[in-house]
Image: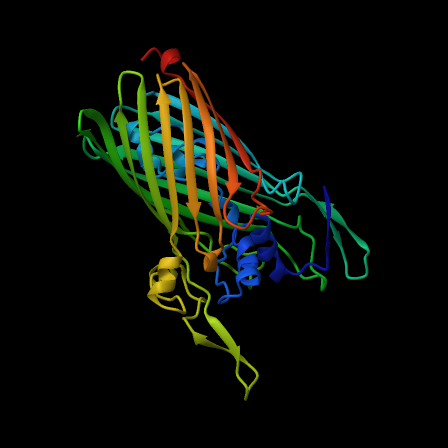
Amino acid sequence: MQRKIFGMKRGLLLSVAAILCSLGLNAQNYNETLGQDKANAINSAVPFLRIAPDSRSGAMGDAGIALSPDAYAQIWNSSKLAFVETPYGISITYVPWLRQLINDMNLAYVSGYYQIDKLQAVGASLRYFTMGNVNFYDNNGNGMGSFSPHELAFDLSYNRKLSDNFSLGLAGRFIYSNLTGGQGGQDHESVESGKSFAVDINGYYTDNVKIAQYDGTWAAGFSISNLGSKLGYSAESKNFIPTNLGVGGALTLNLDKYNKITGTADLNKLLIPTPPIYEDNPETGERQIVKGKSDDVGIIQGVFQSFGDAPDGFSEEMKEITVSLGAEYWYANQFAARLGYFYENAKKGNRKYFTAGVGFKMKVLGLDFSYLIPAGNFSNSPLKNTWRFSLIMDFEDIAGK
């Protein structure tokens, strides 16, 4: 699909990226349809890092922090890889994105892990997000060339058991964003590719449990992800990347020899400052903060400030927490059916949707599929008809373990 952008400036680039990734797209609809207080969504650079790239969690409301370990663990909580039961594995995912708006935008994801021994495992993953082909024009309508904006993230992790039940993981990530291919703005100012380095710190605890007559396992996990340098497209302007705190829990019960069920829930909150409320000073004409705190702060200060800087206080801070709920049923470890729900407060982006999917496991090879259904009054949401397709391979049989 050919898209035209006229006279693009540096300051618009982050807005374009945020819109394309649909994070906060429904907040404007919320204000128009309900007429309540204005939305105050938190925006960041490279919002593609917030797209759930795997079909298993994608079918369970985007919950994955405490799910049982597999090759998808690298994206949610790499410390789970210390508990994998197979020596090495690979996952590949394809996600067409915002097909209600654009027919050539997609996310591709590949991950893998290797079990060093019974206590240690390493993992790696690559995410590649392309926004299709864009034509650039100046303000007079003259062509300035075309380009396919794209972003990627590559990470490596090391994960280790500290006991029979608990593990910690550390991941390093390189982030690259190229939205214009070097095209300058309408004033011919320089526009660069954005780069950032970040780390994830995460943990996982699991143990056996017995409820009534059913044996099973329960697990809990946490993940501080994308803690790293700001990213920008010029030396003068840098923006926070989506640093996030996530906590999750999961419970699996074996109903009998062939049937088992899992319930899981994740809570997530961005660890970047909330935008303050500005008004123009009637005397000087300058913009000034009337509620909240300045978001022009450093990375570490921004993390700590994010817990108490919302203009409307604690009640607004709580609205910044997203909720993911999911359920999974397995038959004979060969067929899975999944359901989920994702909730985000209307003032903070208003993404609300149900998810569903299925999975198949055939020795080495596994296939997962998920589908997203917008909830509420947003039947025309850009997220409508979002599907994910994943291929997962574990090599236990090949390795002979």
